[in-house]
Amino acid sequence: MRGRKALTLIELLVVIAILAVLASIAFTFGDRLGEGERVVQCQAQLKAIYRAIKMYKLDTGGVPPFYPSEYEALLQDAKGGDEHARQRVSEYGLNLLYALGYIDSRRVLKCPDNDVNPRDYPYVEVYWAEMNGYQTQDPDTLEWPYLPDLGITDPNDPRYRRQLQPATEPPHRWWPSDDTVITWCRFHRGLYRKGGRDMDIVLFWDGSVEAIPAPANHFVRPGGVGP
Image (cartoon, rainbow, N blue to C red):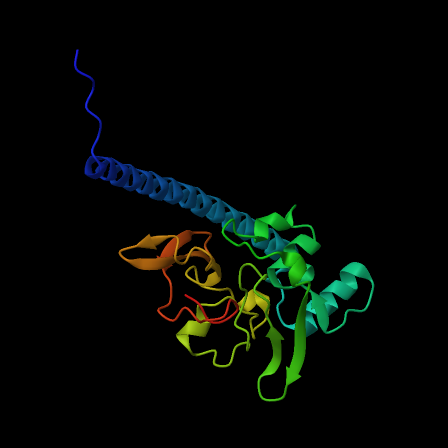
Protein backbone atom coordinates (compact mmCIF):
# COMPACT_ATOMS: atom_id res chain seq x y z
CA MET A 1 0.00 0.00 0.00
CA ARG A 2 1.37 3.36 -0.95
CA GLY A 3 1.75 5.97 1.76
CA ARG A 4 -0.40 9.14 1.70
CA LYS A 5 1.30 11.92 -0.23
CA ALA A 6 2.40 14.81 1.97
CA LEU A 7 1.48 18.40 1.17
CA THR A 8 4.10 20.41 -0.61
CA LEU A 9 5.27 23.72 0.87
CA ILE A 10 3.25 25.68 -1.69
CA GLU A 11 0.10 23.69 -0.96
CA LEU A 12 0.61 24.21 2.76
CA LEU A 13 0.99 27.96 2.28
CA VAL A 14 -2.18 28.05 0.17
CA VAL A 15 -4.11 26.23 2.92
CA ILE A 16 -2.78 28.65 5.55
CA ALA A 17 -3.76 31.63 3.38
CA ILE A 18 -7.30 30.28 2.91
CA LEU A 19 -7.67 29.71 6.65
CA ALA A 20 -6.46 33.26 7.33
CA VAL A 21 -9.03 34.71 4.91
CA LEU A 22 -11.84 32.66 6.48
CA ALA A 23 -10.77 33.74 9.97
CA SER A 24 -10.72 37.39 8.86
CA ILE A 25 -14.24 37.09 7.40
CA ALA A 26 -15.53 35.44 10.57
CA PHE A 27 -13.89 38.10 12.76
CA THR A 28 -15.32 40.96 10.67
CA PHE A 29 -18.81 39.44 10.73
CA GLY A 30 -18.63 38.92 14.48
CA ASP A 31 -17.39 42.47 15.02
CA ARG A 32 -20.21 43.92 12.90
CA LEU A 33 -22.75 41.80 14.74
CA GLY A 34 -21.40 43.06 18.07
CA GLU A 35 -21.51 46.68 16.89
CA GLY A 36 -25.09 46.20 15.71
CA GLU A 37 -26.06 45.09 19.21
CA ARG A 38 -24.31 48.12 20.71
CA VAL A 39 -26.16 50.44 18.31
CA VAL A 40 -29.49 48.91 19.38
CA GLN A 41 -28.51 49.34 23.05
CA CYS A 42 -27.50 52.96 22.42
CA GLN A 43 -30.86 53.65 20.77
CA ALA A 44 -32.70 52.12 23.73
CA GLN A 45 -30.76 54.34 26.14
CA LEU A 46 -31.56 57.43 24.10
CA LYS A 47 -35.23 56.46 24.31
CA ALA A 48 -34.86 56.26 28.10
CA ILE A 49 -33.38 59.78 28.09
CA TYR A 50 -36.38 60.97 26.06
CA ARG A 51 -38.82 59.50 28.59
CA ALA A 52 -36.91 61.12 31.45
CA ILE A 53 -36.96 64.53 29.76
CA LYS A 54 -40.70 64.22 29.15
CA MET A 55 -41.29 63.43 32.83
CA TYR A 56 -39.10 66.39 33.78
CA LYS A 57 -41.16 68.61 31.43
CA LEU A 58 -44.43 67.44 32.97
CA ASP A 59 -43.13 68.20 36.46
CA THR A 60 -41.42 71.53 35.79
CA GLY A 61 -42.93 72.92 32.59
CA GLY A 62 -39.50 73.21 30.98
CA VAL A 63 -36.44 71.33 29.81
CA PRO A 64 -33.43 70.43 31.99
CA PRO A 65 -31.30 73.57 32.44
CA PHE A 66 -27.86 73.83 30.91
CA TYR A 67 -26.60 77.29 31.76
CA PRO A 68 -24.74 77.34 35.10
CA SER A 69 -26.93 80.03 36.65
CA GLU A 70 -30.07 77.96 36.11
CA TYR A 71 -28.31 74.73 37.01
CA GLU A 72 -26.92 76.06 40.29
CA ALA A 73 -30.26 77.52 41.35
CA LEU A 74 -32.02 74.21 40.74
CA LEU A 75 -29.45 72.20 42.66
CA GLN A 76 -29.57 74.65 45.55
CA ASP A 77 -33.30 74.04 45.77
CA ALA A 78 -32.91 70.27 45.41
CA LYS A 79 -29.95 69.81 47.75
CA GLY A 80 -30.12 72.83 50.02
CA GLY A 81 -26.46 73.71 49.50
CA ASP A 82 -24.33 76.09 47.48
CA GLU A 83 -22.79 74.90 44.24
CA HIS A 84 -19.49 76.10 42.84
CA ALA A 85 -18.42 76.83 39.28
CA ARG A 86 -16.40 73.60 39.17
CA GLN A 87 -19.28 71.17 38.89
CA ARG A 88 -19.20 67.42 39.05
CA VAL A 89 -19.93 65.77 35.73
CA SER A 90 -22.45 63.49 37.43
CA GLU A 91 -24.70 66.50 38.12
CA TYR A 92 -24.34 68.49 34.91
CA GLY A 93 -26.32 68.67 31.68
CA LEU A 94 -28.22 65.46 30.99
CA ASN A 95 -26.61 63.94 34.08
CA LEU A 96 -28.98 66.17 36.03
CA LEU A 97 -31.73 63.69 35.09
CA TYR A 98 -29.97 61.14 37.29
CA ALA A 99 -29.21 63.59 40.09
CA LEU A 100 -32.93 64.43 40.35
CA GLY A 101 -34.14 60.84 40.06
CA TYR A 102 -35.58 60.82 36.53
CA ILE A 103 -33.34 57.93 35.48
CA ASP A 104 -32.29 55.09 37.76
CA SER A 105 -28.70 54.57 36.60
CA ARG A 106 -25.88 56.69 35.21
CA ARG A 107 -25.21 53.83 32.79
CA VAL A 108 -28.18 55.07 30.76
CA LEU A 109 -26.04 58.11 29.91
CA LYS A 110 -23.02 56.11 28.76
CA CYS A 111 -22.95 54.69 25.23
CA PRO A 112 -21.78 51.05 25.03
CA ASP A 113 -19.07 52.19 22.57
CA ASN A 114 -17.73 54.85 24.93
CA ASP A 115 -14.68 53.42 26.70
CA VAL A 116 -13.79 56.61 28.59
CA ASN A 117 -13.62 56.08 32.34
CA PRO A 118 -15.81 58.75 33.99
CA ARG A 119 -13.54 58.71 37.04
CA ASP A 120 -10.81 60.26 34.90
CA TYR A 121 -13.02 63.32 34.28
CA PRO A 122 -14.93 64.07 37.49
CA TYR A 123 -15.48 67.80 36.87
CA VAL A 124 -16.48 70.32 34.24
CA GLU A 125 -14.99 73.81 34.36
CA VAL A 126 -17.44 76.71 34.08
CA TYR A 127 -16.11 80.23 33.56
CA TRP A 128 -17.39 83.62 32.47
CA ALA A 129 -16.57 85.03 29.03
CA GLU A 130 -17.72 88.62 28.60
CA MET A 131 -18.63 88.34 24.90
CA ASN A 132 -20.29 84.92 24.91
CA GLY A 133 -21.71 84.54 28.39
CA TYR A 134 -21.11 81.30 30.21
CA GLN A 135 -18.81 78.77 28.57
CA THR A 136 -17.92 75.27 29.63
CA GLN A 137 -14.97 73.00 29.19
CA ASP A 138 -16.65 69.73 28.27
CA PRO A 139 -14.59 66.62 29.06
CA ASP A 140 -15.15 63.73 26.70
CA THR A 141 -16.92 61.77 29.40
CA LEU A 142 -20.06 63.91 29.00
CA GLU A 143 -21.38 61.01 27.02
CA TRP A 144 -24.13 62.74 25.07
CA PRO A 145 -23.81 66.46 24.34
CA TYR A 146 -26.48 68.87 25.47
CA LEU A 147 -26.29 72.33 23.85
CA PRO A 148 -23.25 73.85 22.12
CA ASP A 149 -20.19 74.75 24.21
CA LEU A 150 -20.58 78.46 23.50
CA GLY A 151 -24.29 78.64 24.16
CA ILE A 152 -26.73 80.07 21.62
CA THR A 153 -24.69 82.66 19.72
CA ASP A 154 -27.25 83.12 16.94
CA PRO A 155 -30.82 81.92 17.59
CA ASN A 156 -31.67 82.49 13.91
CA ASP A 157 -29.00 80.07 12.70
CA PRO A 158 -30.77 76.80 11.77
CA ARG A 159 -27.88 74.79 13.23
CA TYR A 160 -28.69 76.27 16.63
CA ARG A 161 -32.48 76.32 16.23
CA ARG A 162 -32.46 72.54 15.85
CA GLN A 163 -30.49 72.15 19.08
CA LEU A 164 -32.58 71.99 22.25
CA GLN A 165 -32.08 75.22 24.17
CA PRO A 166 -33.65 77.18 27.01
CA ALA A 167 -36.42 79.35 25.55
CA THR A 168 -36.30 83.13 25.68
CA GLU A 169 -40.10 83.15 25.83
CA PRO A 170 -42.07 81.86 28.83
CA PRO A 171 -42.43 78.06 28.67
CA HIS A 172 -46.19 78.19 28.00
CA ARG A 173 -45.54 80.24 24.83
CA TRP A 174 -42.71 78.20 23.34
CA TRP A 175 -42.00 74.55 22.66
CA PRO A 176 -39.44 73.01 20.32
CA SER A 177 -40.48 71.62 16.95
CA ASP A 178 -40.61 67.84 16.58
CA ASP A 179 -37.32 67.74 14.63
CA THR A 180 -35.39 69.59 17.34
CA VAL A 181 -32.26 67.66 18.31
CA ILE A 182 -32.13 66.78 22.01
CA THR A 183 -28.77 65.02 21.84
CA TRP A 184 -26.75 62.66 19.69
CA CYS A 185 -24.15 59.92 20.07
CA ARG A 186 -20.85 60.20 18.18
CA PHE A 187 -19.16 57.09 19.61
CA HIS A 188 -20.15 54.83 16.70
CA ARG A 189 -18.01 56.72 14.18
CA GLY A 190 -15.57 54.36 12.51
CA LEU A 191 -17.63 51.39 13.70
CA TYR A 192 -21.11 51.95 12.27
CA ARG A 193 -21.22 53.01 8.61
CA LYS A 194 -23.83 53.29 5.87
CA GLY A 195 -23.06 54.14 2.27
CA GLY A 196 -19.40 54.56 3.19
CA ARG A 197 -20.16 57.25 5.80
CA ASP A 198 -19.89 57.18 9.59
CA MET A 199 -23.22 57.45 11.37
CA ASP A 200 -24.35 59.30 14.49
CA ILE A 201 -27.38 58.18 16.52
CA VAL A 202 -29.67 61.19 17.03
CA LEU A 203 -32.54 61.72 19.50
CA PHE A 204 -35.24 64.19 18.42
CA TRP A 205 -37.83 66.08 20.45
CA ASP A 206 -40.68 63.87 19.25
CA GLY A 207 -38.90 60.82 20.71
CA SER A 208 -37.70 59.37 17.43
CA VAL A 209 -34.16 58.00 17.24
CA GLU A 210 -32.45 57.94 13.85
CA ALA A 211 -29.03 57.13 12.43
CA ILE A 212 -27.87 60.05 10.28
CA PRO A 213 -24.50 60.75 8.60
CA ALA A 214 -21.94 62.25 10.95
CA PRO A 215 -20.52 65.70 10.12
CA ALA A 216 -17.70 65.57 7.59
CA ASN A 217 -15.46 67.31 10.11
CA HIS A 218 -14.82 64.71 12.80
CA PHE A 219 -12.95 67.22 14.92
CA VAL A 220 -16.19 68.75 16.21
CA ARG A 221 -16.02 68.59 19.98
CA PRO A 222 -18.60 66.49 21.85
CA GLY A 223 -20.52 69.54 23.03
CA GLY A 224 -20.25 71.40 19.73
CA VAL A 225 -22.96 71.94 17.18
CA GLY A 226 -24.07 68.60 15.85
CA PRO A 227 -26.76 67.31 13.51
